[in-house]
Image (cartoon, rainbow, N blue to C red; front, side, top):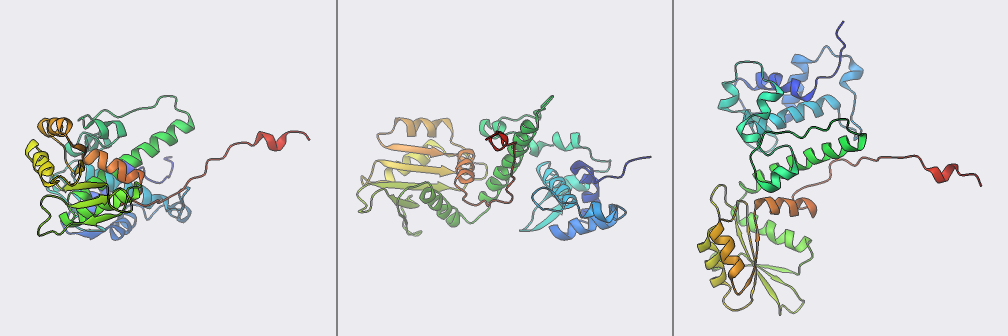
Length: 298
């Protein structure tokens, strides 16, 4: 007799796609409810109410992870906040979808490990921990969650209003401990998006340039224009982009008489994650161990 259990996250792939197969946009909460109602309503009540260590309903957590993997694989997308819709790739998926199928999707190349995110290399190799200790499994799980959050954060940065993106960068630098910032006039900023005052009197300034690119790389010309816009007020600048810097841009910044710091999309989300900008703490887990001192004889 087959044991009744809550579906694994990858077992929710096909139910999710089936619910979305009419091509309509649907709210995430409604999607979860429909998946449970149509496919898992026969599970015992106590199983449907089972919760994770952080207090989230377990089956909703599994569906949410299934949805996340399908998005990375290009089978669904988020047309607006809190909503989900199937893609053409998802609609054309006629056979039963497995975890291996999703892992080999073209949009999931750097989904699993932080190392892949930082190196920007394409790979479908997944880190497998053999004979893992409980701590190894915890660390691996946290790494996967962190990588997913950073990928989602970068996706969000690429679609927000360019002016708001500039403000996000200034907020980040403020959180990192730099001084008060000044937003420049959008009509006449001369290539400068903001100015950081390193000291209270504003004697030392850092000029900021923020480029919200999707695919285009920052080129040597962009760095040259940025240096020109600094106009002798300062020799310090930070150039931030959601994409990458090409070789010419990197060399120009490196060889300039000014001190130019380049922050690409990968470094940007690392910093935003570290300094809690655009992210929030969802769950806190406590790991306890035996207190040997408590049992020592007095």
